[in-house]
Image (cartoon, rainbow, N blue to C red):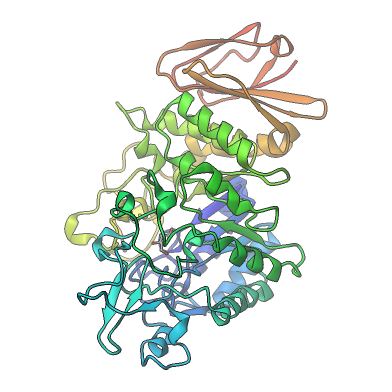
Length: 520
Ligand code: NOJ
């Protein structure tokens, strides 16, 4: 399992209220105990933090808020010593406007770095060159006029995040050099940010009226957009992949492909020569419904090319916490348990966002304390380690984002580790079972038709077969078992109250219960 750490919020080792690399190092044993195989760290590079690290000023330096290159090396060595791999966030689409490359680019129209970014003349009326929109509503247009040279520059995100021009070979070479820098230091791969945006329509034509208001590639008709998901992007990704092929073992390339159209999304795997894994926006956008998840799993499985493998995630630093998103009538906690079983039993790589293993929910941040440009503070709050001050995240009096003060129940790591019926313990047990059960870790998968209540699939490896049955309903539901499962044994249930383990020809699932049954 891959585990996403948002470093500002994991552990604050130096007590300044913001998480850091020494904090990650201090909790490596925690990750091992949970059963994590690899961590992905959101950006740790030098940055003015307009977009909390996704605006980079030096790709080969650690921002002092997180520590130093020495701290990084120690963290990496500590991870490797424990068998954990480390995946860094690589932010290729844009830099900070304070990156020296952009400072040179904007200095004059003839600067050698001018063409490292996307510049265009104003429209006839002096406005932006076209109608493209930034992904962040606060930024409005994707273009900002630069007074010094009288041209507009493109920014797919904040005004302070100018887009690099990946059509320029010098940019591709420089950014490949960044990957080599970190690989030579020993990292195991990259999560590639906004990879579907790297190439834009070179004619800079307007987006057609149907998509004139679209900010992302996730809506209807998104295929019509001219600045997202352009055909030329695949050549660039192939080039990146090839450039890394001399490293042994080959580094992971996990791409953030914000494209909802399933065929176009799957194209980013290429012919085994583009991304190894692609984040699946469609999966985490589903409503809580057995039928909806059945369909997205079926589509994903059908489209991922032979020899490749999906990645399953329900949380990250941009979207609502899963325990909040699926909460209806107080069912968030039980649904989070069912989601855990689904994530860890589907065929593919599970990806977990820090804190989801204890069911962290969105934390209300008072408007006056909001810090994120795009309203995502609620899902980035400090990890809740203990029932103590600031949930054990920091010794500072004020963490950079609030910790919920009236923490209800046992929503912290310490208490949940001591409770065999907690969500943490369920994640732990699921990960242990996945590791010791070849049918779950690498077996073939067969999705069974759904009746709209239960999502069920078989996983099978040589001489081993299990059935996973997940009741999405809030009523008990009986599932009749196929012949080879009659007399099977329930290996794990999401419901800590379950007593009966032996199955006859039927299994009676409690409300919101999921089970893993071993064939007899
Ligand atoms: C996607 C990242 O996940 C998000 O947090 C960031 O704001 C944008 N890309 C821009 O880098």
